[in-house]
Length: 193
Image (tube, rainbow, N blue to C red):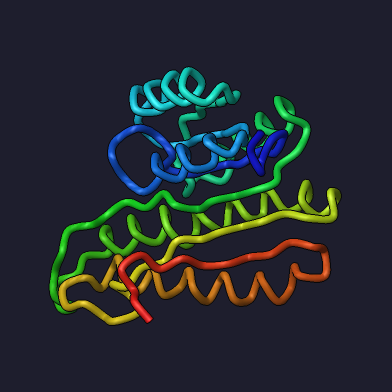
């Protein structure tokens, strides 16, 4: 018996590939949580689904999606609700990493890539999950920011500014959605206190 038996988590970037997302998928599966994992690489998603179901006996729905595309996000969340009847956790982990460049050479395309997959992708998933969590009277959202933004690493304008925006998004949603029993928190890998 795990502490999340019968619960459902959507984990963006949750496919197999050695990153934080698959580690999160594994941690939730170990606790008995059914999963909806998203990403852009179908093979990584299918590999993760097969392994998680085999190793932990949970149900896994693998959905190819780009968080920056609102229609794709809405479809993932609808599939999750249709398959499991609830959404307990949303883990916004997915993020594209644009090339490094000094401020004066940072391209619009790099900014757009970071922001569409990060802040906008997180917001899209949050907004799509909100009605379900509100109706349940509870929900848990964890957004991923980064020490890169917190400390302002040189050469990382696109990525870092986006990650700081995610911190702002999280703070505001936490204040607005607490009355519905929805907690919204942020995790900053690499940021030590």
